[in-house]
Figure: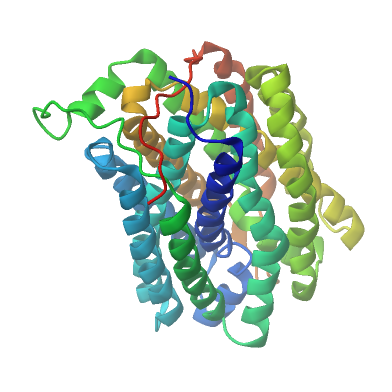
Length: 411
Protein backbone atom coordinates (compact mmCIF):
# COMPACT_ATOMS: atom_id res chain seq x y z
CA UNK A 1 0.00 0.00 0.00
CA UNK A 2 1.29 3.49 -0.78
CA UNK A 3 2.14 5.86 2.02
CA UNK A 4 -1.06 7.79 2.88
CA UNK A 5 0.68 10.85 4.33
CA UNK A 6 0.65 13.91 2.09
CA UNK A 7 4.07 15.45 1.42
CA UNK A 8 3.17 18.43 3.61
CA UNK A 9 2.17 16.22 6.55
CA UNK A 10 5.26 14.13 5.95
CA UNK A 11 7.38 17.25 6.27
CA UNK A 12 5.66 18.30 9.51
CA UNK A 13 6.24 14.79 10.84
CA UNK A 14 9.95 14.89 9.99
CA UNK A 15 10.40 18.35 11.52
CA UNK A 16 8.70 17.17 14.70
CA UNK A 17 10.94 14.09 14.86
CA UNK A 18 13.93 16.39 14.30
CA UNK A 19 12.82 18.48 17.28
CA UNK A 20 12.61 15.38 19.46
CA UNK A 21 16.04 14.29 18.25
CA UNK A 22 17.37 17.78 18.98
CA UNK A 23 16.58 17.40 22.68
CA UNK A 24 18.07 13.92 22.83
CA UNK A 25 21.23 14.77 20.84
CA UNK A 26 21.88 18.03 22.68
CA UNK A 27 21.58 16.23 26.01
CA UNK A 28 24.19 13.69 24.88
CA UNK A 29 26.48 16.17 23.10
CA UNK A 30 26.63 18.80 25.83
CA UNK A 31 28.68 16.52 28.09
CA UNK A 32 31.67 16.64 25.71
CA UNK A 33 32.24 20.42 25.53
CA UNK A 34 31.47 20.61 29.25
CA UNK A 35 34.42 18.26 29.86
CA UNK A 36 36.96 20.89 31.05
CA UNK A 37 34.32 22.59 33.24
CA UNK A 38 33.17 19.34 34.87
CA UNK A 39 36.74 18.11 35.40
CA UNK A 40 37.50 21.36 37.22
CA UNK A 41 34.20 21.47 39.14
CA UNK A 42 34.42 17.91 40.49
CA UNK A 43 38.22 17.54 40.61
CA UNK A 44 38.11 14.43 38.40
CA UNK A 45 40.38 13.04 35.66
CA UNK A 46 39.82 11.81 32.10
CA UNK A 47 38.91 8.30 33.32
CA UNK A 48 36.07 9.60 35.52
CA UNK A 49 34.91 11.94 32.79
CA UNK A 50 34.91 9.02 30.35
CA UNK A 51 32.59 7.16 32.74
CA UNK A 52 30.21 10.14 32.79
CA UNK A 53 29.95 9.94 29.00
CA UNK A 54 29.82 6.14 28.98
CA UNK A 55 27.14 5.88 31.70
CA UNK A 56 24.63 7.45 29.32
CA UNK A 57 25.62 5.07 26.53
CA UNK A 58 25.64 1.89 28.61
CA UNK A 59 22.23 2.68 30.13
CA UNK A 60 20.84 3.42 26.67
CA UNK A 61 22.23 0.10 25.44
CA UNK A 62 20.54 -1.83 28.24
CA UNK A 63 17.22 0.02 27.85
CA UNK A 64 17.27 -0.54 24.10
CA UNK A 65 17.74 -4.26 24.66
CA UNK A 66 14.88 -4.29 27.17
CA UNK A 67 12.68 -2.20 24.85
CA UNK A 68 13.22 -4.66 22.01
CA UNK A 69 11.13 -7.19 23.98
CA UNK A 70 8.01 -5.01 23.93
CA UNK A 71 8.39 -2.07 21.52
CA UNK A 72 6.46 -3.74 18.66
CA UNK A 73 3.53 -4.47 20.98
CA UNK A 74 2.58 -0.82 21.45
CA UNK A 75 1.40 2.08 19.33
CA UNK A 76 4.44 4.13 18.28
CA UNK A 77 3.32 7.67 19.16
CA UNK A 78 2.24 6.94 22.73
CA UNK A 79 5.39 4.99 23.53
CA UNK A 80 7.64 7.71 22.11
CA UNK A 81 5.94 10.49 24.10
CA UNK A 82 6.08 8.47 27.34
CA UNK A 83 9.81 7.87 26.88
CA UNK A 84 10.30 11.54 26.04
CA UNK A 85 8.54 12.63 29.24
CA UNK A 86 10.70 10.35 31.39
CA UNK A 87 13.79 11.58 29.56
CA UNK A 88 12.88 15.18 30.43
CA UNK A 89 12.57 14.31 34.12
CA UNK A 90 15.93 12.51 34.11
CA UNK A 91 17.64 15.45 32.38
CA UNK A 92 16.23 17.82 34.98
CA UNK A 93 17.72 15.50 37.63
CA UNK A 94 21.12 15.96 35.93
CA UNK A 95 20.80 19.71 36.38
CA UNK A 96 19.89 19.31 40.05
CA UNK A 97 22.55 16.68 40.88
CA UNK A 98 24.54 17.72 44.00
CA UNK A 99 27.75 15.83 43.14
CA UNK A 100 29.65 13.54 40.77
CA UNK A 101 27.97 10.29 41.87
CA UNK A 102 24.45 11.66 41.64
CA UNK A 103 25.23 13.17 38.23
CA UNK A 104 26.56 9.79 37.09
CA UNK A 105 23.29 8.12 38.14
CA UNK A 106 21.15 10.82 36.55
CA UNK A 107 23.12 10.54 33.28
CA UNK A 108 22.41 6.82 33.31
CA UNK A 109 18.66 7.43 33.68
CA UNK A 110 18.68 10.01 30.89
CA UNK A 111 20.47 7.52 28.66
CA UNK A 112 17.98 4.77 29.50
CA UNK A 113 15.04 6.81 28.19
CA UNK A 114 16.96 8.66 25.47
CA UNK A 115 18.15 5.43 23.89
CA UNK A 116 14.59 4.20 23.39
CA UNK A 117 13.59 7.61 22.00
CA UNK A 118 16.30 7.50 19.36
CA UNK A 119 15.23 4.02 18.26
CA UNK A 120 11.57 5.06 18.08
CA UNK A 121 12.36 8.07 15.86
CA UNK A 122 14.21 5.88 13.35
CA UNK A 123 11.46 3.25 13.53
CA UNK A 124 8.76 5.81 12.67
CA UNK A 125 10.83 6.99 9.70
CA UNK A 126 11.07 3.38 8.50
CA UNK A 127 7.33 2.82 9.01
CA UNK A 128 6.10 5.95 7.26
CA UNK A 129 8.67 7.12 4.69
CA UNK A 130 9.05 5.18 1.41
CA UNK A 131 12.46 3.67 0.71
CA UNK A 132 13.13 6.00 -2.23
CA UNK A 133 12.94 9.05 0.09
CA UNK A 134 14.26 7.47 3.28
CA UNK A 135 17.83 8.81 3.11
CA UNK A 136 16.52 12.32 2.46
CA UNK A 137 14.15 11.93 5.42
CA UNK A 138 17.06 10.81 7.60
CA UNK A 139 18.94 13.87 6.37
CA UNK A 140 16.10 16.16 7.51
CA UNK A 141 15.95 14.52 10.94
CA UNK A 142 19.75 14.66 11.10
CA UNK A 143 19.56 18.46 10.96
CA UNK A 144 18.81 18.08 14.68
CA UNK A 145 22.52 17.37 15.06
CA UNK A 146 23.41 20.47 13.05
CA UNK A 147 21.04 22.76 14.94
CA UNK A 148 22.20 21.41 18.28
CA UNK A 149 25.80 22.22 17.33
CA UNK A 150 24.97 25.62 15.80
CA UNK A 151 22.62 26.87 18.48
CA UNK A 152 22.21 24.32 21.27
CA UNK A 153 25.84 23.68 22.26
CA UNK A 154 27.05 27.32 22.02
CA UNK A 155 24.01 28.51 23.99
CA UNK A 156 24.53 25.76 26.57
CA UNK A 157 28.21 26.65 26.91
CA UNK A 158 27.31 30.33 27.30
CA UNK A 159 24.88 29.39 30.07
CA UNK A 160 27.50 27.16 31.72
CA UNK A 161 30.17 29.87 31.56
CA UNK A 162 27.91 32.68 32.82
CA UNK A 163 25.83 30.71 35.34
CA UNK A 164 26.66 27.09 36.21
CA UNK A 165 27.21 23.78 34.44
CA UNK A 166 23.67 22.88 35.60
CA UNK A 167 21.97 25.47 33.38
CA UNK A 168 22.19 23.54 30.06
CA UNK A 169 20.40 20.52 31.51
CA UNK A 170 17.58 22.67 32.86
CA UNK A 171 17.27 24.27 29.40
CA UNK A 172 16.96 20.83 27.77
CA UNK A 173 14.26 19.81 30.26
CA UNK A 174 12.24 22.93 29.35
CA UNK A 175 12.69 22.23 25.63
CA UNK A 176 11.46 18.67 26.20
CA UNK A 177 8.15 20.00 27.52
CA UNK A 178 7.75 22.15 24.40
CA UNK A 179 8.45 19.31 21.95
CA UNK A 180 6.18 16.91 23.85
CA UNK A 181 3.31 19.37 23.32
CA UNK A 182 4.13 19.68 19.60
CA UNK A 183 4.55 15.92 19.19
CA UNK A 184 1.19 15.19 20.79
CA UNK A 185 -0.47 17.24 18.02
CA UNK A 186 1.63 16.38 14.97
CA UNK A 187 2.72 12.76 15.34
CA UNK A 188 0.39 10.18 13.75
CA UNK A 189 -0.78 7.04 15.47
CA UNK A 190 0.94 3.95 14.02
CA UNK A 191 -0.60 0.58 14.78
CA UNK A 192 -0.09 -1.47 11.64
CA UNK A 193 2.89 -3.35 13.12
CA UNK A 194 0.86 -4.74 16.04
CA UNK A 195 0.07 -8.40 15.54
CA UNK A 196 -3.43 -9.67 16.28
CA UNK A 197 -1.87 -12.94 17.49
CA UNK A 198 -0.69 -13.17 21.07
CA UNK A 199 3.08 -13.60 21.42
CA UNK A 200 4.33 -16.79 23.09
CA UNK A 201 6.90 -15.00 25.30
CA UNK A 202 8.45 -11.52 25.57
CA UNK A 203 11.67 -12.47 23.78
CA UNK A 204 10.08 -13.91 20.65
CA UNK A 205 10.70 -10.69 18.68
CA UNK A 206 14.40 -10.70 19.61
CA UNK A 207 14.75 -14.32 18.51
CA UNK A 208 13.06 -13.49 15.21
CA UNK A 209 15.46 -10.59 14.66
CA UNK A 210 18.71 -12.34 15.55
CA UNK A 211 17.99 -15.47 13.52
CA UNK A 212 18.10 -13.30 10.39
CA UNK A 213 21.76 -13.06 9.34
CA UNK A 214 21.08 -9.85 7.44
CA UNK A 215 19.91 -8.25 10.68
CA UNK A 216 23.10 -9.42 12.40
CA UNK A 217 25.26 -7.97 9.65
CA UNK A 218 23.47 -4.63 9.95
CA UNK A 219 23.93 -4.62 13.74
CA UNK A 220 27.65 -5.34 13.41
CA UNK A 221 27.92 -2.54 10.86
CA UNK A 222 26.25 -0.20 13.38
CA UNK A 223 28.77 -1.15 16.06
CA UNK A 224 31.73 -0.41 13.79
CA UNK A 225 30.23 2.95 12.77
CA UNK A 226 29.74 4.21 16.29
CA UNK A 227 32.98 2.80 17.62
CA UNK A 228 34.92 4.62 14.92
CA UNK A 229 33.43 7.95 15.96
CA UNK A 230 33.15 7.82 19.73
CA UNK A 231 36.70 6.86 20.45
CA UNK A 232 37.57 10.38 19.27
CA UNK A 233 34.52 12.63 19.79
CA UNK A 234 34.21 12.82 23.62
CA UNK A 235 37.72 14.17 24.07
CA UNK A 236 37.92 16.72 21.23
CA UNK A 237 37.24 19.67 23.52
CA UNK A 238 39.72 18.57 26.19
CA UNK A 239 42.36 18.01 23.49
CA UNK A 240 41.59 21.38 21.89
CA UNK A 241 42.12 23.25 25.16
CA UNK A 242 45.07 21.24 26.49
CA UNK A 243 47.02 20.39 23.31
CA UNK A 244 45.93 22.60 20.43
CA UNK A 245 45.93 25.76 22.55
CA UNK A 246 42.32 26.81 21.95
CA UNK A 247 40.79 29.11 24.56
CA UNK A 248 37.82 27.74 26.46
CA UNK A 249 35.86 30.83 25.37
CA UNK A 250 36.50 29.92 21.69
CA UNK A 251 35.13 26.38 22.06
CA UNK A 252 31.59 27.44 20.99
CA UNK A 253 33.07 28.45 17.61
CA UNK A 254 33.97 24.81 16.95
CA UNK A 255 30.35 23.76 17.28
CA UNK A 256 28.98 26.86 15.57
CA UNK A 257 31.05 26.42 12.40
CA UNK A 258 30.75 22.64 12.37
CA UNK A 259 27.01 22.76 12.92
CA UNK A 260 26.48 25.42 10.25
CA UNK A 261 28.36 23.29 7.74
CA UNK A 262 26.44 20.12 8.60
CA UNK A 263 23.12 21.97 8.40
CA UNK A 264 23.84 22.41 4.70
CA UNK A 265 25.66 19.13 4.08
CA UNK A 266 23.11 16.86 5.80
CA UNK A 267 20.34 17.72 3.34
CA UNK A 268 22.70 17.40 0.36
CA UNK A 269 24.07 14.06 1.53
CA UNK A 270 20.56 12.65 2.00
CA UNK A 271 19.57 13.78 -1.50
CA UNK A 272 22.74 12.36 -3.08
CA UNK A 273 22.32 9.06 -1.27
CA UNK A 274 18.77 8.61 -2.62
CA UNK A 275 19.88 9.68 -6.10
CA UNK A 276 23.28 7.97 -6.44
CA UNK A 277 22.93 4.99 -4.14
CA UNK A 278 23.12 4.75 -0.37
CA UNK A 279 26.05 2.33 -0.21
CA UNK A 280 28.10 4.25 -2.78
CA UNK A 281 27.68 7.62 -1.03
CA UNK A 282 28.33 6.06 2.39
CA UNK A 283 31.62 4.53 1.24
CA UNK A 284 32.73 7.79 -0.38
CA UNK A 285 32.05 9.77 2.80
CA UNK A 286 33.57 7.18 5.12
CA UNK A 287 36.81 6.95 3.13
CA UNK A 288 37.08 10.75 2.95
CA UNK A 289 36.46 10.91 6.73
CA UNK A 290 39.78 9.14 7.31
CA UNK A 291 41.57 12.46 6.72
CA UNK A 292 39.95 14.48 9.56
CA UNK A 293 40.04 11.42 11.83
CA UNK A 294 43.82 11.38 11.45
CA UNK A 295 44.41 15.14 11.52
CA UNK A 296 42.21 15.97 14.51
CA UNK A 297 43.97 13.38 16.70
CA UNK A 298 47.53 14.26 15.58
CA UNK A 299 47.62 18.00 14.87
CA UNK A 300 49.19 19.42 18.04
CA UNK A 301 49.47 23.19 18.58
CA UNK A 302 47.62 25.10 15.82
CA UNK A 303 45.96 28.48 15.22
CA UNK A 304 42.22 28.73 15.75
CA UNK A 305 41.37 29.03 12.04
CA UNK A 306 43.22 25.82 11.15
CA UNK A 307 41.61 23.92 14.02
CA UNK A 308 38.18 25.12 12.85
CA UNK A 309 38.89 23.84 9.33
CA UNK A 310 39.85 20.43 10.72
CA UNK A 311 36.93 20.09 13.14
CA UNK A 312 34.40 21.35 10.58
CA UNK A 313 35.58 18.69 8.11
CA UNK A 314 35.32 16.17 10.97
CA UNK A 315 31.71 17.18 11.71
CA UNK A 316 30.64 17.12 8.07
CA UNK A 317 32.22 13.79 7.11
CA UNK A 318 32.12 11.72 10.30
CA UNK A 319 28.51 12.67 11.05
CA UNK A 320 27.55 12.82 7.37
CA UNK A 321 28.37 9.16 6.75
CA UNK A 322 25.67 8.30 9.31
CA UNK A 323 22.91 9.63 7.00
CA UNK A 324 23.19 6.99 4.25
CA UNK A 325 24.30 4.46 6.85
CA UNK A 326 21.06 4.84 8.86
CA UNK A 327 18.99 4.52 5.68
CA UNK A 328 20.88 1.29 4.90
CA UNK A 329 20.43 -0.05 8.44
CA UNK A 330 16.73 0.85 8.67
CA UNK A 331 16.06 -0.74 5.27
CA UNK A 332 17.84 -3.94 6.34
CA UNK A 333 15.05 -4.72 8.80
CA UNK A 334 12.02 -6.84 8.03
CA UNK A 335 9.13 -4.31 8.26
CA UNK A 336 7.13 -6.35 10.80
CA UNK A 337 10.18 -6.48 13.09
CA UNK A 338 11.44 -2.96 12.49
CA UNK A 339 10.67 -1.64 15.99
CA UNK A 340 12.43 -4.55 17.68
CA UNK A 341 15.34 -4.38 15.25
CA UNK A 342 15.78 -0.62 15.69
CA UNK A 343 15.68 -1.00 19.49
CA UNK A 344 18.41 -3.61 19.27
CA UNK A 345 20.25 -1.36 16.85
CA UNK A 346 20.02 1.53 19.33
CA UNK A 347 21.44 -0.77 21.99
CA UNK A 348 24.37 -1.63 19.76
CA UNK A 349 24.90 2.06 18.97
CA UNK A 350 25.03 3.01 22.62
CA UNK A 351 27.06 -0.02 23.68
CA UNK A 352 29.64 0.72 20.98
CA UNK A 353 29.69 4.41 21.98
CA UNK A 354 30.16 3.55 25.64
CA UNK A 355 32.89 1.00 24.97
CA UNK A 356 34.65 3.42 22.61
CA UNK A 357 34.66 6.35 25.05
CA UNK A 358 35.68 4.07 27.94
CA UNK A 359 38.51 2.49 25.94
CA UNK A 360 39.72 5.91 24.80
CA UNK A 361 39.59 7.15 28.40
CA UNK A 362 42.00 4.40 29.42
CA UNK A 363 44.28 4.85 26.40
CA UNK A 364 44.80 8.56 26.99
CA UNK A 365 46.14 10.28 30.09
CA UNK A 366 46.29 13.92 31.15
CA UNK A 367 49.53 15.42 32.46
CA UNK A 368 49.92 18.17 35.06
CA UNK A 369 49.77 20.84 32.34
CA UNK A 370 46.35 19.60 31.20
CA UNK A 371 47.66 18.07 27.97
CA UNK A 372 46.23 14.82 26.60
CA UNK A 373 48.80 12.06 26.05
CA UNK A 374 48.06 9.22 23.61
CA UNK A 375 45.23 10.80 21.61
CA UNK A 376 46.91 9.77 18.34
CA UNK A 377 46.52 6.10 19.38
CA UNK A 378 42.80 6.70 19.79
CA UNK A 379 42.75 8.08 16.23
CA UNK A 380 44.37 4.92 14.86
CA UNK A 381 41.73 2.77 16.60
CA UNK A 382 38.98 4.93 15.05
CA UNK A 383 40.52 4.71 11.58
CA UNK A 384 40.74 0.91 11.81
CA UNK A 385 37.07 0.57 12.84
CA UNK A 386 36.04 2.95 10.06
CA UNK A 387 37.89 0.91 7.42
CA UNK A 388 36.26 -2.30 8.66
CA UNK A 389 32.82 -0.67 8.33
CA UNK A 390 33.60 0.43 4.78
CA UNK A 391 34.60 -3.11 3.83
CA UNK A 392 31.55 -4.63 5.54
CA UNK A 393 28.68 -2.47 4.26
CA UNK A 394 28.34 -4.26 0.89
CA UNK A 395 27.24 -7.43 2.71
CA UNK A 396 24.00 -5.82 3.94
CA UNK A 397 20.83 -6.50 1.94
CA UNK A 398 18.23 -3.73 1.87
CA UNK A 399 14.50 -4.49 1.62
CA UNK A 400 13.46 -2.03 -1.11
CA UNK A 401 9.77 -1.64 -0.47
CA UNK A 402 7.22 0.88 0.69
CA UNK A 403 6.06 0.61 4.28
CA UNK A 404 2.47 -0.36 4.94
CA UNK A 405 0.71 2.47 6.75
CA UNK A 406 -2.92 1.99 7.62
CA UNK A 407 -3.52 4.54 10.34
CA UNK A 408 -1.57 7.77 10.19
CA UNK A 409 -4.18 10.26 11.35
CA UNK A 410 -2.75 12.77 13.85
CA UNK A 411 -4.47 12.49 17.19
